[in-house]
Image (cartoon, rainbow over all chains, first blue to last red; front, side, top):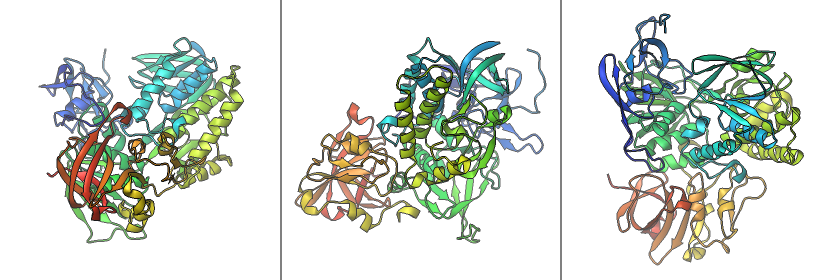
Length: 104
Length: 363
Length: 159
């Protein structure tokens, strides 16, 4: 799902690969990605689900407004993955509850 | 607590221009943006802008962003930029609370310019919460900032300028736009944009809307339906398309929660996109030294946001005692630019909205 | 029609063309039918051939005595609504803006396309230019059959 060539924009070909895990599985993105853009490039659209009916949810706004992309990242719940920069070694998980208070 | 005479909230076109003009007048300011990079929505606009040279017409949005950032960057001693910092509260004593990299900070300001922009509207239809259904801004972010296609086959909902422009950008990214649907009988945006889509083979379906999305974990199909002159669905006109993404471009609404929080007088004006602060022609709200500019004062084109930003930066610094050497000349110039931008038939809605807001057309 | 479907009528199109006699030399044809706030065509013209006036919502007017068909307005128009047209013996030469990849290459034959997006014939690519001033909008010079003068608008690669 990556754009290979573009008439107006230049996407760097030699971007650094960043490895992370998604629900425990190895995954990767590139330097400059957000968690959501990396997952989307891998074909993962379902990032979350609704609390009561467990309907699948993906991101809607991609600018941190709508909250439908929230996931658990490195144990921290409700992380807006559409605006959170991807970092090496991140453990990204689909959240199964509303998010519990956590100790840092 | 940090003390600062002028704080500008939002680093999109309006906020950047306000900061630049304040600096030109000799006024220092903190410019706060919740994103890692300034520029607002400009950083994803690959098309050439309309307007006149004064609003950077024929320059692509991405390059306007660079230009405005350079302008602000040339005053490092006056403009302090806070990126990755979200304003979470605005209080009547002009205290601003900010969450900056997990730290909670307070600023005591004398004057505040709110330039928080807008958020996208959503549309009600069956299964509108399926993954693969995105706002037009999200589609632009994904493809033009991160270089990721939102899908391979997409349907666009809405024929305002954003719907038309993003459809074209999708094609440039190699995505097939199977159809563009518009509930109104006429195309909403500039026909030059519509003509571009049409000549490259995109069907434009007016008096047509989305009935439902179909899919298990993500969008697989979309069903559209024709509407009659009273906007009622015409049974039997359903059409199904196989798509893996749906793009919703049905308008924007001003992000004004901070202004409501501080107690500015607000009015619901549909022509301006929803709830907006009451302002005068100098972009002052009902509270002294609280200003608003850009989409958060009413939805318009980015070219207007640029001019409004300049004007507001000028006014706010003058009130703080830093009067730009060309103050009167510039105020006249910016106000006549705004008038000019809003003068045509596409500005009619804005003119009407501003009239409802307070009787002044150059607010 | 334009308001509903996004393509201009024959009357609208021909109203924007100069007389055919004038087209023995290349001339700009501006398909701008609406009063939108925009004036780069006028300010970019090195020959002052395009007038909009103080109200930037005015529709541009071309002075065909001054227009040289240079094509600068073609890549300066944010709406990509301008092309240059020149009538030859049995062909018409157009200069059109193009912002997709792959770009055409000289001597290739692409499909000629009308305003509805339908293929109407062939277009021989004569020249493709893209310099820094054009800011990523390529100018493509093509030859099409004379009968398509009011129909041709763009090109498409055979899929």
